[in-house]
Image (cartoon, rainbow, N blue to C red; front, side):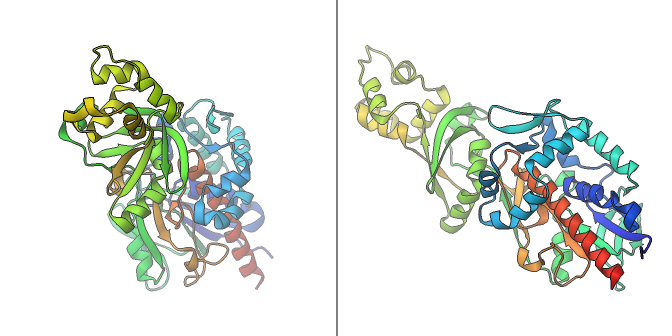
Length: 415
């Protein structure tokens, strides 16, 4: 027999929380679930809107095997989530909200509008239509001595008793949008194991000369090869005053970060002319300079960009430029060693690694030491590169945990 008014508290109004709210509220008529979303900010899904400013990369089109491997050591854990809500499910879901998608040349998937705001408006309207109740400006403080959820709202404390709770509070990237990691202390006080939160999809410090940093800050290095720890890729990144950042750096940030933490630094190998072999670079550099300066010779023979040439000046002894042979110079161009230091601070990162460990959860992502409390999204101990993988797994975790909550509550009704 159905038990009415099973109160489900979803704490965090980002993609994971909203997706769980959608799935659970769709069951409300048959289960008696009452779904409430508590959000500390005055509006929902602020990070989703921020991500949409540059064109919302909703997922990726590569085959599911390759897709799953993007989650590295957590691939086996993320795989069931992707089964519950795959990239194809994501595209169908977007279409159902009036946001048809397309596949870009890189394989990334975007809404045709390139915007997050129309999608979010349609999503919120759907959730409200399904009876989801939103509680904005509710800052979660933890539990009281009786097990009730405690929130700070309008200058006062508010108590809520929930039959099931889902925590979807995000990591610590973009803290001004709401994900500041304040939940770490709350859960650690409850004995929940938390892996240290670290920057992911982040830039790294480089000890640039003052001249280089001032001249090339903000300059992109395009179509360059990158090699590190056996991984070879091609992409672009950007010079910043403190170091390097951008998509190609983010793709390697996990292994770069671990190496920097273990060894104090990392040597990233760049191929500044990936379309040419080392022999071809040598042949071109061997052409007579005919009075051209070193810089103009590089521009004319190799079409190196100014910033790439600037990198060579950072490495080569300027007083001995004329003594470098073509073959030696070709080695530097094809295997330029960029010495990286510490990652940028976490509040500047695209996402974060670390969080609630999977050892602290059962297979349904419920805390082992706190019955009825489930965890989803970026506050879990996983990471992924940019390219649609972050958002896909975040929303998939919302679907997966919603299924676990439904099973938990239905089982409790029958017992």
